Amino acid sequence: MKVMCVVGTRPEAIKMAPVILALRESPWCALTVVATAQHRQMLDQVFGLFGITADIDLNLMRDNQTLADVTARALTGLDQVLAELKPDAVVAQGDTTTVLATAMACFYRRIPFCHVEAGLRTHNLEQPFPEEFNRMVASVVTRLHFAPTEGARDHLLNEHVPPANIHVTGNTVIDALLWMAAKQPTLPVQVTPGRRLILLTVHRRENFGEPLANICRAALSLVRNNPDVELLLPVHPNPHVKETVARMFGGQDRIHLTAPLEYDQFVAAMQRSYLIMTDSGGVQEEAPSLRKPVLVMREATERPEAITAGVALLVGTHENNIREQAQRLLDDDRHYATMASGASPYGDGAATQRIIGLLRGLAPA
Image (tube, rainbow, N blue to C red; front, side, top):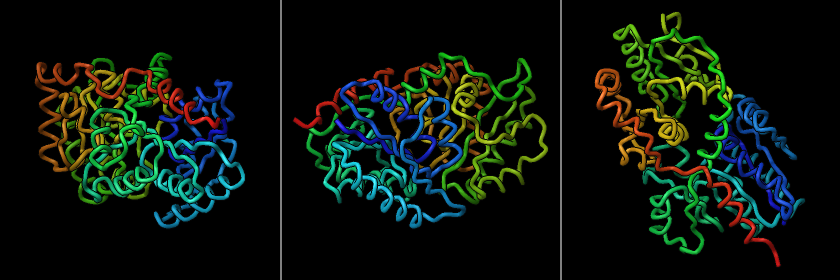
């Protein structure tokens, strides 16, 4: 069976790595890995950690590329690859521009598209942007929907997706996380013993500008008001993020600004952290499995299961609310213990094997 896996960004690489490695070891599968390199350096870092090499690299990344630019180049590039390889099935993960283009290209070529992490929704096309649109369009043409949770399955059913096409598998991010955490990776910065580390990540387009400034002001206040706290912020390379972070955090005591961490280093940072503040989707899934409370700095999330379970809290992007909720976690041991329960709703580490079994069912007679 000819299977093609398409990967464009760092989060996709993390979540697709277990699937790619399992397919590589499956005697029934002839696998081709295609990288669009929507994120160049960060994608390469993850592939290197997992020992994955792309068979085809479209190398799409350009400085200051627009969404229209990368979508058009991804669609035409992937269409050419599909025309040459004629795979029996194509697999992609998530909600990036790469996934949108992959789903469209497969539809045009009448090739089954299989969607890992299907069914996430906020029901607001502006939150997150453009990911909500991307995943909704991808779902329209998906043959196999690998939903991470029952909630994701329900979203797809509400959109009239045939039940036989939806399979609740859990999320492959937990498979990757447990694999990497077991290796006991090393934290890349020195945190003073006895101090509590806050891990902060920010990168979403809808948070550029004043929301990002609010997040930074809240984090800076937390460090200044709590002498036993240090802050680690791996700075996303987007200029909108870098410029704001440099202006607001540069030269501050007990604040570690680093380049984007490699995946093993980031797992180490999550393990060492006391609490995590993020606008990332993947971190919302990973942190509960490591028993780390998560403050989600967004106005809406497509991953409500952690909120419902009480292991994450949606705090928005207003400075006062972020600061107050984080300070409560620093001061209230009982509240902290409740959120650090380890009750992850996103998987048991066996999502990959479920997905592989379902993919094999698409093999031509």
